Length: 330
Ligand code: SF4
Image (cartoon, rainbow, N blue to C red; front, side, top):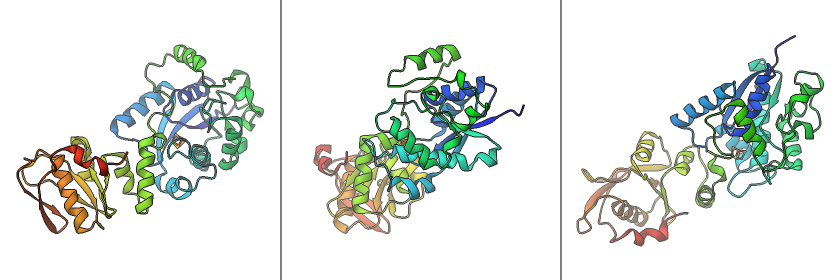
């Protein structure tokens, strides 16, 4: 009999690990697709983690960059709205299944799976939401949800016997007791809590995104800014972002920005790498230099020159960080 192959939506969370491992236990080859929507934290450490959890799930990890497509088709116009943050989870899941379905041929795979659990998340995994996800995907018949399959209509892979439905589960709700029993059974040693890693679900991220959309159009380069830094909105409308530590300064320094100036602090002065909208007025630019100096090792009584684009501004820091709180976002 032909060895079946499944493509999995693989967040790296426990449910997706269990779902993949259950398929692998049935002798099904699993490719764990981790979709990068561009706004999640994917650095080297995260990639290493994803490889490790995919390995424990006996699956092969593939990271698929769908940033542009997700931004264009899903992020700003979700049919089923947002969760508590800026997270369009129902549309996002539907879209991931669609993207995965479009990859079936490339990977010579037969069907799709996910770690969705009926009733685990109030907005995106109630019975109605699971149905909406199926319809949005365009691959309704080919989707198996191993964690809750026995509570759902049988899918084609189950009806055809590609997957043994009897070995699938009937988990529902937010209690994770059964998942932890399976952690024991499969000997998982390294896994994360649900929802980890998606900035879209975080309140501070939604605040920054909402602020951005009030003043500007979202562009790809904004993804880096929204993920990192200390954010200020200045009185004439410019955006100022300060790197909070060496790592963030390095990320900003190595990123390309078209809409923003990169600003180094004055020669020899230790401070953040800062980003300022190119449309900043003179007043906002001057204020930006004062804020930058306030977050640097500047001597309060001394004036420093800071270059923004081709212009130079001389300024002193504020007396205290309390003076800049009113411009701070989030
Ligand atoms: S948590 Fe983030 S990545 Fe996951 S479905 Fe929701 S929006 Fe998409």
